[in-house]
Length: 88
Image (tube, rainbow, N blue to C red; front, side, top):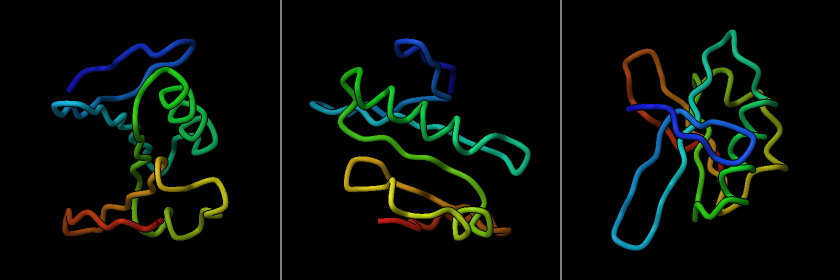
């Protein structure tokens, strides 16, 4: 996976299907979540059909969900490496 430039921001990666693209932004416990939401929003504004912000499950559960919707997904990864869709 490599960094992808989208407008004034960069995202950590992307998933590409036949007629869609999803932006991925991964944030560790030390990274700025607000910046990650901004990067995902920039990707949506630049033509991505959806974006996913990925962090730990514990951190994801503490984030207010008002900014997430069907095109901006919040994913959490637990200690065993399993991915959980936290919102929506």
